[in-house]
Image (cartoon, rainbow, N blue to C red):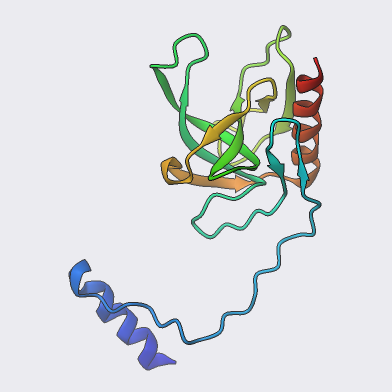
Length: 161
């Protein structure tokens, strides 16, 4: 065990091109996400709750990515979004905001480490984005299941309008 750790540390000091490929012959225990029903929404989004803070964005996580402005899609900013499912090769995500707007359909999702100031965040459920998983800058946190379910329900209500 100790020797393996030392070998891994030495490997990290090597230039990236000379690093050893990780061993794949070891069996890893399966990661069992919380049981979640998978459903397909009206627009083809497969809704699921399967967060796993492993470096890859997953449904049920709040992540940071580029979000275009609604009034000018050629511009935008990096902001947190909650991933609610998958849409083909893309992730289906709903942008979060810290500003409450009574003229928009929003769902409160509480506070989390995605907001440095600890403000309550609101999911803008009228806007579902297709996000390229390779464009996600970082994982922020796992959204509590009750908040995830409220966001999904809000998206469904918005689609029925």
